[in-house]
Length: 270
Image (tube, rainbow, N blue to C red; front, side, top):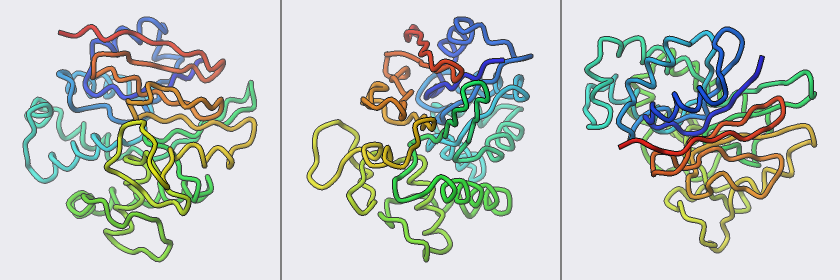
């Protein structure tokens, strides 16, 4: 049995199919783990979702910002050009139920190597311990199950910029979701800068992983997607980026957790 974590698919089903063929994915014994943003921008988001439903017993995933957006569109009866095929599909209810069951954070332990992999779409901020991050992920899952309509309605916005344990209600949920799904740059106190995507230096703000690395033991890893401009390169052994910009004409990338081998396929869609 092998565990493969795959970066941002964003509706690029043809490349997902080629990547699965390349790694010789066997749903009867292997496990695929998606690092969020399964849908949007690409032309075949519905095909990606149908693939997940067909193989849901061998697939896990964390939520990305585009996955939240799809849930919002479904539950608030709104439209989006790249997602209308899902919205009009007879499978839309099953798709929504499956996405709503997903966490913001996954922990995968590989017994053979005694290594732990934490998987989150945008990453994990240094201000949270792994235990805290897991607790906050569980909290959002419970709210999605209890009142997803209100959560999705009120999740938009860049404020508050910094986590505070005293936050309540929609401000609390929005902040948790923003750290897990939109984070790139943080200041020394852990405040988010959400409008910056490039790699140019910014006074007082640095990539989140340059601070979180100090929280990791030698046998612990973080795997994330979301930040296509990095092209997967963090220059850190224990924090691995998997968004290699497939939807922007680059590559779709997976990592096999058992030996940390990186496998990619080139974008070939028309």
